[in-house]
Image (cartoon, rainbow, N blue to C red; front, side, top):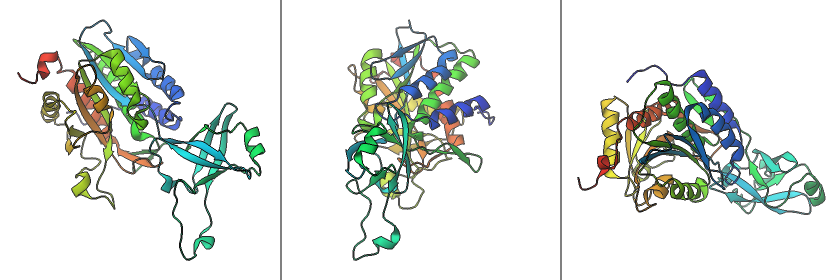
Length: 362
């Protein structure tokens, strides 16, 4: 495999704008518009559904259908209660980490536009009592600088408004991409780059390729469930993130031994079809693409599960991107891994022909 970077300056510029844009679960439309606009030159047509999943299609008339997939949503909060003093209490929208919330800046999305606020927290001087409280859902709160509930409501904020963090994209030490929502808008970026490579290298596929950016993964794989019924694919290759387990406070005996920079992670799980997974492993070896293996037991916890068990069974596989600090605002991945996931999916597509390739009893 060539060591030359496959990511262009235009790719990185898109990645930055895509990650910086808010795309909370249930409100992914603006991010999907950015993604579709980037993907447009590389596909024949698009499919969208009523909840916002977007699909770029190559060879839409082909009877055999292959999906490559990532998910578009990011974790967030909902306004749940407004006090008479103008403070906001929240509930999760996805797996938001309450322990990182205190002192974070936030954007509250309203019909009047973005309202800025902060997660407040008592000063250390006032907490050194008999028992210091830790952050939890019941005691974290947002301060908009208002003094009354009426002032909050006049800004357009009400129960049900969604709340995101504004933390933006940066590159550390030349090759580490850092941002909130890398889980898993990086997946949407990587599958878009696969489409770009197919187009620029003038590759003709013997099947229909469906480049799927699903919504609502963070609250139960819902977007993938819906779009799987619409497409009815024969094969699905899903990409998501997994944990870099080399950081402090993670037990490798429980989480496995995975490290960013050492390559894509190929999953072993009941939802992963053995023949498809073996094909991907063989392709990694043939193309000298470094890879790691991860056993995920009963369920992968990703959209792989939704595709695999749909439509009477779809041959599915999961290629993950090792990530540090999942569900925080400083999620971190290695540029080399991003490029190698793109290459592994790209090379895998060039080997897929038909269902017989993955016949379980062949």
